[in-house]
Amino acid sequence: MPRYKQVPMPAARSFGLVAATSVGLFTLATFDHRSSPSVARSTIDTSNVALGMDTRRWSAKERAALFRMSLSQLPPLAPDPSNRVADDARAAELGQQLFFDTRLSGNGKVSCATCHQPALDFQDTIPQGHGMAFGGKRTMPIAGTAHSPWFFWDGRADSQWAQALGPLENPLEHGATRTLVAQEVSARYARQYTTLFGALPATKGLSPMAGPNSDSAGRAIWSRLGPARQESITRVYANVGKAIAAYERRLAFGRSRVDEWIDAERSSQSSSASMSPDEISGARLFVGKANCATCHEGVRMTDDDFHNTGVPGGRSASGVALSVDDGRATGVRKAVAGEFACTGPYSDVHSRDACAELRYADTANALSVRAFKTPSLRNVSRRAPFMDAGQFATLEEVVAHYDRAPRAPLGTTELHLLTLSAAERRQLVAFLRALDAEPVATPASLLLPPLRLSERSLARQ
Ligand code: HEC
Ligand code: HEC
Image 1: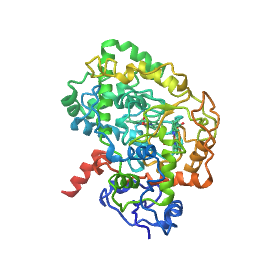
Image 2: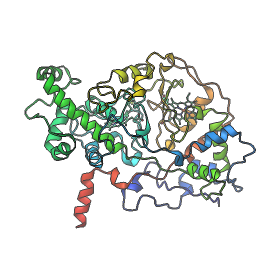
Image 3: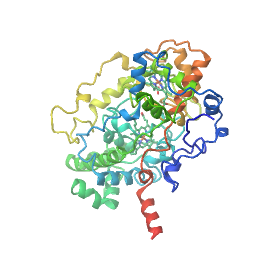
Image 4: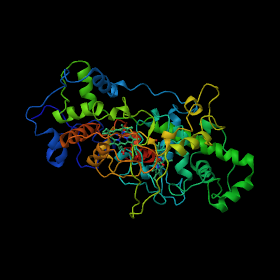
């Protein structure tokens, strides 16, 4: 038997569920090799398991790139000066309630958790998210993203709170309006809200359709409200985003076998959580010959930047070709002009030195055409299908794409032909799978609507 341990994955899609049950967060169970043929192939067949890397074969540069990837290198979360309540526990609690609240939607059925399901690493396993209707983009995971400077595949929001305000008014997602959101907050969260943000404006009797991003009838009602009322409602709306961001900031990455292995290598200690020869070869390809770590760099496995990687346009659930959007080229202009930008009237920033990312964003970079945010690859094997519109069904397809480096459907790809052997492609996939983390690193209490938690404690009394 190999000496390394596997994190349990009782069924391919049920990761994270463990965290939400009474079994406990960090329980390690025996891994059933039979249930996962792909893992079995890459890690079990090897009778002579190589623990650790052969340092003579790794260049200093490859080793340095690998060592930067361990989760123990994660810096503390930087403060968000644009959000006064970012690290306020009361705001996080309110944000958690709002995150799971389906009343903040046009049909009373959609919450953030409809698409960002805690049991699925805060995504939904389908090629394009579905709220009020299908949107054109793949739902992104949330854990660890508080460290990002940009949000969405095209980076059109510059903070987690500005991001949260997009889906609420998007007719395909929540299909709500800021007036409806302010009314729901007044009806249900008034005490919590006023403690954090001060008095609520009177919104009783207003049409819940009123909003600047509503349909034409709703926009007409909104414009008749006049600037002062509009401003007071929009301020509640912005504060809702800030509370949700305070919650999201607490969702953390879990440790993977790769992290255990790197830490053992760095301290020159032998590790019980070691890697198979294929996984180790895959790691070396990742930081070396295959160039993956030039973009999937460092502990979060992202350079926080945007790249055109020649990914083809997506297809809708009914097989219709989706528009081939220009990604970051438009996204960066939206971010700079954003109503809820760090430099805007709803930001809590007071210093002229703040918001550097936004102030110095390059809005005319030709490389931005069809460039998308480099996603973290932590837990990646558990969130097929892949890419911004779920274009690839398997990791094998992803690696084959990088190997071929095809022409981009728009703009110019940054990839170069790799010509990997079949064995090397398999090793890269084996490494990507080894990045799967413990079920979830987040306390179980953060993975449920708080209401359900209090129900449970009532039941115990
Ligand atoms: C209908 C499904 C759906 C709903 C509902 C939804 N999202 Fe998303 N979320 C997505 C999709 C799809 C993307 C990527 C969209 C894009 O880039 O255009 C995304 C992106 C994000 C991101 C960006 C992550 C990153 O790395 O940049 C965050 C954070 C997020 N959503 C949080 C939320 C919050 C908070 C709510 C509730 C207010 C919410 N989402 C509601 C589907 C959804
Ligand atoms: C030039 C920068 C760059 C390089 C090099 C690169 N990636 Fe990526 N990677 C990206 C970007 C950008 C995306 C998202 C593209 C999209 O969604 O259209 C991505 C997406 C992915 C995804 C899908 C993640 C998800 O959440 O859907 C995987 C897996 C992946 N890359 C693995 C690799 C591997 C393995 C290599 C090396 C063979 C590699 N990448 C090299 C930038 C890069």
